[in-house]
Image (tube, rainbow, N blue to C red; front, side):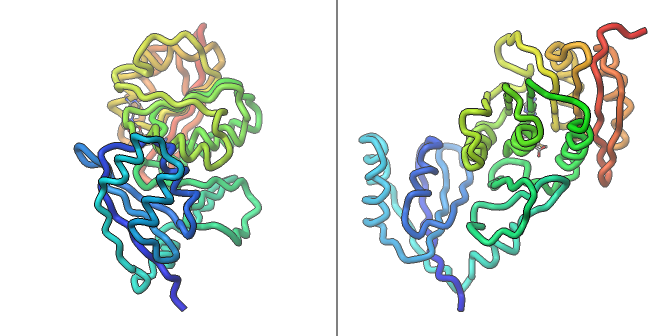
Length: 298
Ligand SMILES: C[S@@+](CC[C@H](N)C(=O)[O-])C[C@H]1O[C@@H](n2cnc3c(N)ncnc32)[C@H](O)[C@@H]1O
């Protein structure tokens, strides 16, 4: 028998992240996806039973303040029965749990019956990079796995956090007292916060939207024991000097998003800022580089 599935589609001018927690409270809610257009968001919400427009609006408005209630009252919702499409099954096929290294990444649609014993990370990466299947992310996870065997991290920085996947993995390995994640995409910040919340790491991880010209928009004086940056090579080269200043002597840096043909230029650029090559990790055509900061290079 097919799983009943209803799709509610609507456009809305703006949304704050709390609304996604409101959706989670609705009966028969299965999950959602959204895309960001110029002036609005397009949302798709999935339910396992029919829910009328009125019931949906009433149920949502119970949890909302006055301004949001008004906003929701005015939206036009298209409801369709997509049982025949068997969304859950299709989706489950598309978003099977991804098992990698010490982790299993699984989507929002998977509620029960997970047989894995590893570190389970609930991850929705629909609108942000970082599902756990890309070579550049995997390279970073491999290096984390290597580092955690001998190095303790108290302060961790994730540059280009995407879905927040590497911040969550780092937290699982080291439980640092400070985890800070930055990204130039507002969507990524929103998504990372939600993913952190869904993994009960709500107040343990901090997120900041940046403009990409520097690691932080304003000057920031803290240093980190481990920084990861999985962003493209040109961004790494641009940020090299700024990244280096956030590392203390003997702190580590993981750089990813680098094609094999670009590795030499990255290593020599960071060497200018007292970072020495420790290890390279190749996955497919990509390389992830581990470097250590040495304030005194002999
Ligand atoms: C390849 S994804 C990595 C996502 C995730 N960290 C992972 O490893 O799967 C790169 C992310 O970096 C962000 N990004 C690109 N340039 C950046 C910059 N200069 N500063 C901060 N974030 C940047 C992008 O928006 C994107 O979310």
